[in-house]
Amino acid sequence: LRDYQRDAVTGFWAGGSGVVVLPCGAGKTLVGAAAMAEAQATTLILVTNTVAGRQWKRELIARTSLTEDEIGEYSGERKEIRPVTIATYQVLTTRRAGVFTHLDLFGARDWGLIIYDEVHLLPAPIFRFTADLQARRRLGLTATLVREDGREGDVFSLIGPKRYDAPWKDIEAQGWIAPAECVEVRATLTDEERMAYAVSENEDKYRMAATARTKLPVVKALVDRHKNDQILVIGAYLDQLHEIGKYLEAPIVQGATTNKERERLFDAFRAGDLPTLVISRVGNFSIDLPEAAVAIQV
Image 1: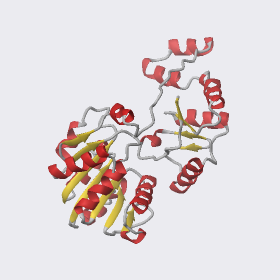
Image 2: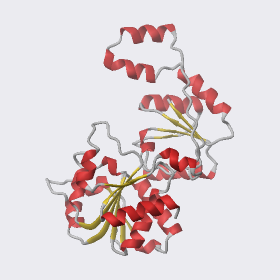
Image 3: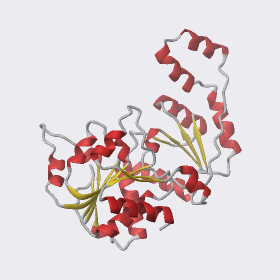
Image 4: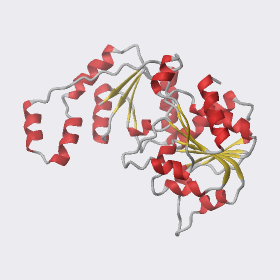
C-alpha cells in the first residue's frame, strides 16, 4: 500500500466506521481490500452497476489471496452470496408489491464489513435504504463528496464521519497520479444558431449551447490532434452522443448499453484496440479506464 492508502485504512479502522475520500485513480479499491484484510469477516460491497462490480472482483482476485469462488456477484444477472459479496444498489433496493425482497435477505445476514462504493450517491431516496443494513463496520468510498442537492452531509449521518481526505493536488505532487492539464476550447455559434439561442426560453438555452453542431469539427480536430492517444469523448445528451459517435465513427456507451457490450468496449479500449470511445454520464461512476490520456467534455 502507498502511505496515504495506509493512512486512510488506519483512520477508518481507528474510528470504526466512516468515509474515505480519494481522487480518481488513487486506488480506492485497494483501500477497500486493505480494510477487508483487517476485518477478516464476511463483507458486502455495494456498487453502482454490474460493470463496476466486476472491476472490483478482478482487482480483488489480482491483488489479494481471495479466489474467484470466494467472491459472489448479486446483480440482475446473478444471485450469489459468498464470503465476499458484491451487489448493486439497484438490485438491493428493487421493490415488488411493496416489499424489498433482496434488501430483507441481506439485512438478515451478519456482515462484518459493508463497503459503500460511490458513497456520495447514498442520500438518494431509494439508495439510502441500504444504509439500514446491519454491519460491525461501514466504509464509504468516494472521489467527490459533492451532490447537486447539497445533501452530502447526509452521508455522514448514514455511514459515519469523514475519516480521511486526500486532496487531488497532494497525491499528484507525490507522483501517484498523472498531472491533469485542463484547457477550455470555445466554439463560435453560427448566425442561425445564435438567433435560435437568442429567442429561446431560458431553460432551453443551456442545451442549445451544449449541443451546438459547430462543436463537431472542433471535437474532430482535437481527436485528430491526439490520434496516438486513448481518447474519451464525454457528453450529456443522448442525441448529441449519437451525432458525435456517427461523426467520429466511434462506438457509444450510454445507460441503455448492455453490460456485455460495455465490458467488450471497455476491454477493447484498455487493450488499445479502440482508440476513441464516446461515453455518457455513466462514465462518472466507477469506470476504471486508466489508459485514457485525453478526455474531451463536450
